[in-house]
Each structure stands twice: as structure tokens, then as C-alpha cells.
Image 1: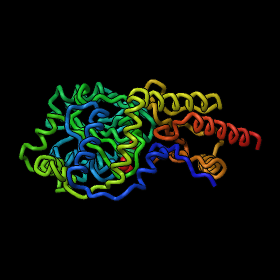
Image 2: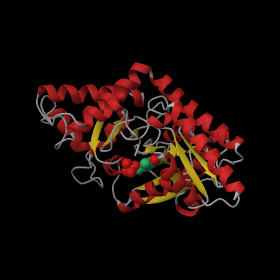
Image 3: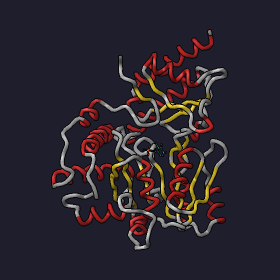
Length: 370
Ligand SMILES: *Cc1c(COP(=O)(O)O)cnc(C)c1O
């Protein structure tokens, strides 16, 4: 039976080159040659974040990176504004609350992006807030928040800006420094096309000052960027991170990044966006309505309303069984009402998009005839 191909919004199916590297030799996570490999990786990641700041590659899921950022910069009792217009915004707020932060939500209309007006209003109502945390690509809806507008506005008001770019880093245009993002979190296994297990975190100059200002913070030891900074400084020549690292995953991510660099970051993004554009057009031709308007939609994930009378679970199960293609379902209150198609990794190959659209055409045809 052929392997199942993932068209979910992460994790992604891996290229043959990345898979081969995952099966490579175990290495020591220290020593001069290892340190050189790790530094090359973080330097390449910095070019993808578009920052002159420092990048740490945390061993964990994207959530570990988000928790580390909030916990390293803020202390229990600190006030923080959190943008919420979907499940991952809610998750960000939950992480902040679990750390003992006082969360003030910034919200948007149903399935709409967060607006600068909403941020401005929240800043006025909560003048003691220290930070704004916001999701770039709200993956539960396939919707982009305009962080290029929100973060400069927050910085103007003296707030630290924390961006969840877990599902956008590498796949969606993002300018960490130019957009006044202080702390930014990605993940290996979404638009970078790498394996599960690594969460790159980028720390800008202002964030670095805050992390090292000596004020006690919510963080413990491992998910504390001050710890990562200390190891980079004091053990930098030999062991530039606090703990053992998943060396195969790091080598495999390096191979995935080489492919992006060889193609060019813009060309990589254009390739994912072209696959998503074809999926949007193809599904509309089949009669589907899309959840998010074109102007706000993610170029790497599309959320789609079920057709009248369509059983989403049956459709998803049929695609897996008959065509070995796996899509994402709806999350939370959208479960059973929508499905989501991601083009973050191997799913962006033109042959895959064609196979998916023709499979869906066959399913819809069969559904209409029965
Ligand atoms: C996938 C995702 C996460 C969570 O990533 P994990 O690696 O599962 O921790 C967080 N935020 C966004 C926007 C995501 O898409």
C-alpha cells in the first residue's frame, strides 16, 4: 500500500533527502564539529526569520518555544495583551495564564484578522500591559493576522512583541526586524519542511535586554532563554545549548533548509502559495465556499466549508482509504463543519495538488449521484 501523504497544516511529509538524513548516525551533541553544524543552522534560520538577532533551536514542539518566550520575558502578575481569533490564539492565552500572567484578550469579529484599532483600544484600556502576544498565521482558520501593522503599533506604546510564527516561518513572508517583532517562534515540521522535534526561537536586541534585566521571571530553567543565552556565551565553543540535542533532527532540518536556500526563500514561498491558489480555485470550481476571504487568507493553509449535506468525517476517511491523502478537520466549534488543506511541505508538489483535486471531484460526483 502506498504511503499516506500529509496535506494537513503540519506536521508535513518529508522529502526523500530529509528522510535519509533522519536515519543518519547518532552524533555527540558537543565538540567543535558539532558546534559548527549547530551554528550554521541557527545562522540560516536567522536569515529566514529576517533578523540580526540571536536564534536558539529548542528541542521540543512549537509550544515549548512559545512558553519559553513568554516565561523568559515576563513575571507572574505581569499584564499581557493576547490576540485571539482562533484556537492557537486561545492556546497562547492559556500558556500565559498558566505562567501566572494577567491576560487581556484582543479579539476580532468571527473569522476576521485582528485589527490595529483593537490593539490600540486594548493598550488604552490596559496601560500597564508589558507585552503583546499574537499569532501570525492562525492555522485553525488559515487566516493571517497583519503583524506588520500590529507589532510596530505595540512597540510605539512600549510593549514587547511576541509572535507565534509556528505555522508561517519559512512559508509566509515575515520580516522580524522590519516589523518590530521582539521574540518570534517557528517550528521545524511545518513550512520549513523538517522533522518534528525542534522549535527555533529568535530573540531581537530589545528582547535580549528584557530577558537579561535581572528581574525575576516566570521561567524555570530549561524553557528559559536566559539559560540558553548563558550556555551560548559560556559554553559556546563546545556545547552552545543547555542540554542534549536531537542531532539527527537538527541534521535533517539543515538538509531541509539547504533546499529552501538553494531554491531561494521567495521562490519557496511562491511555490507553496501557488499550490494553495490552485487548491482554492479548484475547490471553488467544485462548488465549495472558503472560510476566509482571499485578502486575509493564508498562502499555505485553506479552510473550506463542507458542501450542504456533506459528511466531513466520511470525506476525510474516504480520502485516506481510497487515495492515501490526509487532510485536517475543523477544530473546536468548527469540527464537522469545515476541513483544512495544507501545502506546507511535500503537499505543494504539483502532482499532489492534482491528485487531491481530482480525488475531491470524484468524491463530490459520487456524493451528488447517491
Ligand atoms: C501547530 C501550531 C502550534 C503548536 O505547535 P506544536 O508543535 O504542536 O506545539 C502553535 N501555533 C500555531 C499557529 C500552530 O499552527
